[in-house]
Structures are given as C-alpha cells and as structure tokens.
Figure 1: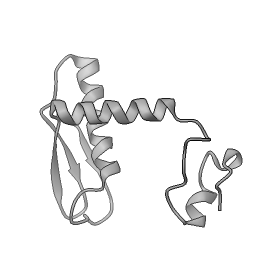
Figure 2 (figure 1 turned 90 degrees about the vertical axis):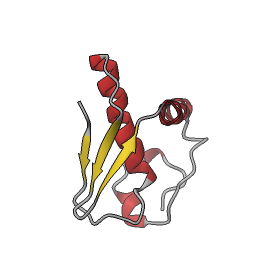
Figure 3 (figure 1 turned 90 degrees about the horizontal axis):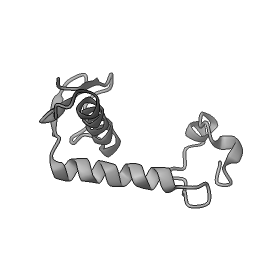
Figure 4 (figure 1 turned 120 degrees about the vertical axis):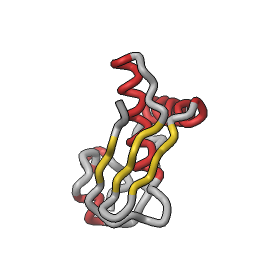
Amino acid sequence: LIPVEVKTREAPLQPYLGHIYQVLAYCLLIESHTGHRPPYGILRYRNRTFAVDYTPQAEQTLRDLLAEMQNATPRTLVRSHDDAARCARCGYRAHCDQRL
C-alpha cells in the first residue's frame, strides 16, 4: 500500500512541510495497521506530483513532531500567522490568548 494525498490547489515549487508531514503520517498509519512499511507516499497537486520518501529519518522527524504536539499546552503554543480569517475558523479560538 502506498498512501496518496490529493490536493486541489496548484503545486508550489516544493511541497509544503505540513503536506509532507501529512503523507508521512499516512505512511506511519499504514505500517502500524498492516505491518508493512511503505517506502514512500505520494503528494498529488492539481498540476504536479511529488514522492515523499518514508525513510527512518523521516519517520523519526514525524515522531518527534507528534511528541511535541502531544506535549504542547496553550501556554507553549505561539500563533504562526497574522490572518484574522484563519483565526476565525480555528477550533481553539475560544481558548487562545493570541487570537486576532
């Protein structure tokens, strides 16, 4: 099994880091549920496709990110944008002291 994430937008010059992590997470899920490690995942934009290698280093980077997310608290998180519309749609807006 090879995971494929399809995006409706035009491809950037390089895949967005968040999209790469999404494909890596699918690889991890496939491996944990099937016992078979996919060698890569596919990130398909409207006009371009990227292969995302699922290397041991990529897996460890993903696991480190997941651990960081699990240990995060509202006080340790910092808003990563200045987009009021994005904040308005955020599920954590009511609890955020950095909302716009």
